[in-house]
Image 1 (cartoon, one colour):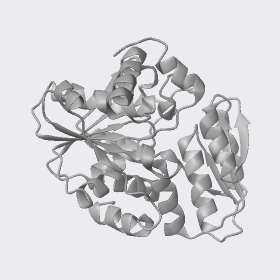
Image 2 (cartoon, rainbow, N blue to C red; image 1 turned 120 degrees about the vertical axis):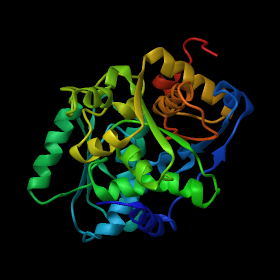
Image 3 (tube, helix red, strand yellow; image 1 turned 180 degrees about the horizontal axis):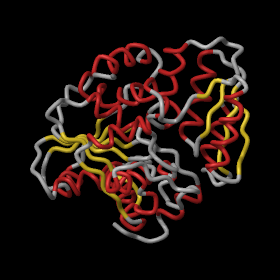
Image 4 (cartoon, rainbow, N blue to C red; image 1 turned 90 degrees about the horizontal axis):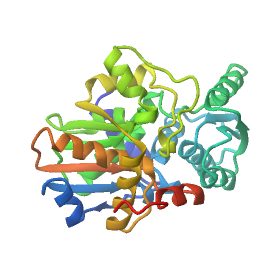
Length: 317
């Protein structure tokens, strides 16, 4: 069973290669959260612009596959870039990534630039199926969230916030896609700290899974502006951590767009709509319980032109 020590081990492995991302604060946003101290962990400053670099790199460093091994992955974006970057960093040449055709162009191009071969697929489910077929033939799959080494790598986001910045939160908020960041954050958080997650209402497999007591799976990729949360379902592994999480909330598209605008405007950084889900989850939980120190994980900053236009189509500030 994974524990806090596994997060420390993961951090020791990846620390020489990653960016120690900043913690930002803003008076307006703190007032918007009821006046409590809120710090934003900005993983958009990470390698490839997202926290996913941590998990992919930890997977490769922990498993040490042969340099001539065929590496494969499926992803709607940031995991694809993370795998391509980590492979390039460590000298792997044979990388193939299966991505849905409607993936962010910024993320598709970023993956290509790190040397990966990309196959665009009709849907997320097709991308997964093609990947599993190659895995059966001997290729090494680096999954986006369903692996202990991925989870531990993602957990270093919270660990780093405490280690480098000395910030001890009593509430942590994360966005929820497949559940890797949520699971790793659970392992890395202080024992008395609450953990909440936010997901799009149009992609709320996490909420549905908790409500029904069994994993809910979409047949096709949900259509949401939060492209990092277009996963089909949690895995059996991440579902166990979802059940231990304080709460999972879902939010409609307009709430996500407005929160994205607010974060961009007041923090003066690029924020993916997926990241805004963490901020919304923190605000929701703060309406229900009092906290003193809140850590909000902003998961990434890869926004293509069409998404940026959609975000700013209306003034929601």
